[in-house]
Length: 401
Image 1 (cartoon, rainbow, N blue to C red):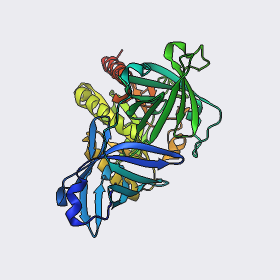
Image 2 (cartoon, rainbow, N blue to C red):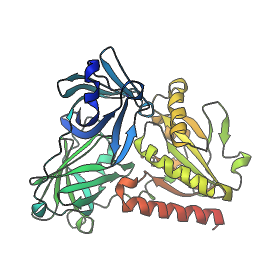
Image 3 (tube, rainbow, N blue to C red):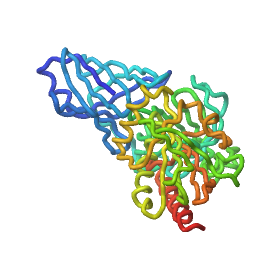
Image 4 (cartoon, one colour):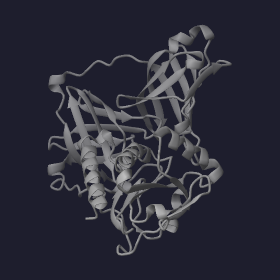
């Protein structure tokens, strides 16, 4: 990703610090925090995932332009400086990637609402779409119920929405009068959540100025007509559970890997179906690396099975190399094709509908469990529960139970 701004050399130091930035997604302006530091060869830009800073891989200024490159996001943000405002656009370079208008003002601390009057909405919620899906890209997952996790300190609120494929990242914001406004953008997953608390205790939610949702506390959701969100451990299955699960794909160097290889014989194998374009797959990667490092010597193997945006090895190879380097991936990442190819390339799978989808194979090569999506640390207790669940599963499979 690159940020570019026409800027006199003498004004460079004025760019240091936090900026209140916005990307425009359809009818919605998505606010987010951006930081600029250094100058010359030390110039860096930062997105924020919660409090985690996501730094640029390179930065430069020249010919009146300021540039930040985030190689692992494969994106570009361009802007010009006019007074105290940055104006430009954010563009994803992947196949079918989108471009969003961008602008930013120097950060100004917001005035907090009266904390004593802020409604208390911390806790676990469930939400469903009400009315038609008005988003540009129609997604069948929009029709499913989602989980919403909220944390509150005074008028400040944070949280995350968890769909069957994964979460939105950390939403941040708070109460502005009688409206709850939360947002997220860290180079991907732009979300604007606006909500009002209703007299019956439900939340009337508008996402990205388009889709309307009804949310209720988890214990009241059924009574409010919100169906149970899908169980990620039951969402996807295999057609013949008694049969070994087969895979055969090359890595980016052309070396073939197959379930019949000696290195997988009598091993517990995790197949991580994902892609470098998938933010929830990026969330899952450190988790899988940690599992591999802790359990590999006991008989665990992990194989990444990637379906990439371009579907062309020459174009996708640098993205996979960058992914492996970023997360220090110690296990093979295989190149399986393009995003829509899962049903053709892995025909044993039934009801595939989420990136990532993680398949756990016992020592006999048969599927012991399949988990759709990934709940990152942004979901709080849901992430902790997932880690405990997977740890217990891997230990059970390694013991042969």
